[in-house]
Length: 126
Image (cartoon, rainbow, N blue to C red; front, top):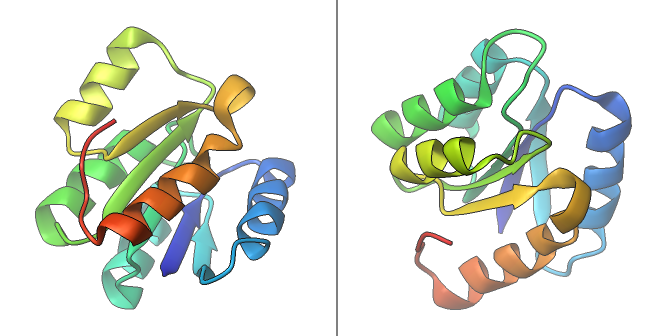
């Protein structure tokens, strides 16, 4: 499973990359810290899954989600954010996110989501 990570915090990105490296069958194909680079690289690299933060150095992970959902609907998306309000959750799920996790309380849930996506071979909202 090819995964792309979009996260503006270097510390969080490194922690996420370390966690993903521990999952058998997961290959991180790239990462970005801003919306424009994220969209360009995701469209070019065509990962199976993109893990997206909402707040980025430039742009928004929600904007990335919307563009990816329109231009590369086969890419499953996992939102991992500190902005885990009900409003953000609903907006992301409505825009096509497969999963939405609170970075503070559900960081490790990304592992289970990737395993679910791999096992299902298809995407479904959570």
